[in-house]
Image 1 (cartoon, rainbow, N blue to C red):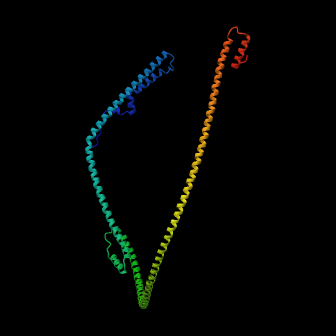
Image 2 (image 1 turned 135 degrees about the vertical axis):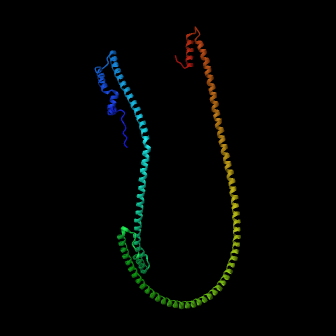
Image 3 (image 1 turned 90 degrees about the horizontal axis):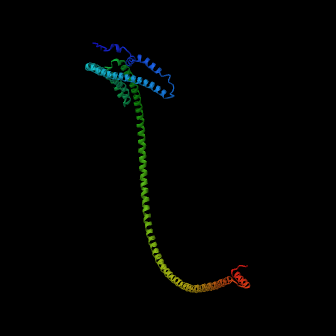
Amino acid sequence: MNIELLDPEPATTALTVTARAALALGTEKARAELKALAAESVTITEVKNQAGREQAHGAGMKLMRARTDIEKRGKAARDDATKFSKAVIAEEKALVAIIEPEEARLLGLRDAWDKARAAEKAEAERIERARIEQIALRLADIRECAVLAAQCRTSDMVEGLIQKLTDAPLEGVDEFAEEAAKTRVDALERMRKIQDDKHDEEQERARVKAQQEAEAARLAAERAELERMRAEQEAAARVERERIAQEQATARAEAAKRDAEDRARRDEEDRLARESRAAEELRLSKVRAELEAQQRAIREAEEDKAAEARRIAQEAADAAAAAERKRLNDEAAAARAERQRKADEEEAARIADKRKRDAADVMLGALQVVAATPRIPKEVLAVVNDAIAAATGEHA
């Protein structure tokens, strides 16, 4: 069953989206009006005074009102479109909810059937793979017979494997029957080759074994002869060893006797040497004691002489030092007395000089008084002035 949904606005939905937008904004009519409105102000190119500013402002505000009117209509159209879109989505969900459960049920039935068919196919493929694998294993077992034949120890064992493979029926190989027959023929050929090689190896081993047994018998006879000769040689060597051992025992006894005698002689010599060394050491110790006593007496005498010499030298040095100190003290005293004498003379000269200056000052004062006295004779005044000049160091 097909369901067709009726278009609620056939006239509007026939338009394109661009045409519907132009219709909502009245673009066809507004375009001419807006062009005319924009053309009204093209003559305004600059503002030179207040009137020009008012003209530009009025034209600009008229254009701004036209722009905001367009933007308001555009926003109203967009808001209406948004409400319409939400309403369409809600209706869409309501309509879908009517049929979606049945759709899911039917598709579930379909998917279940597809899954069952896929499982049947997978099982058939698995069974086919298992059958092919079993046939491959049968063919591998046939090929393995040649490997087992190579591992057999005897040609008879290989013959048993050949007979077993020949008698085994080739059943259940189906479309691989030809390959299985060819594989068995190849395996039998390789096994017969292995059987022939092993038969040749067995014959070679039998020949080598016979040779080895003959060689072993010859070597055994030689070893027996060598053992007999070695036994005779060992018996003769044993007799010789016993003779040598007896001679060595006798020699050791004699050597031991000589060693005992030598030890006794050496012990006696050592005792005499020790006694001699002890007597000599005692004599030497006495000599050393006498020498040490003599050396000690000599050292003491020398030390006494050295002490006396040091005492005499010290006394002489002390006397010389005392004489030198006295000389230095005398010189220092003389120097102090000379310095005191010079100081006294200088002080006396200073006092005498001061007294002279004081007397000269008194005389100068008296002469100045005389010179200042009125009605003094000229001759006296001249003498007084000369005396004053002499006293002061000035010349008239």
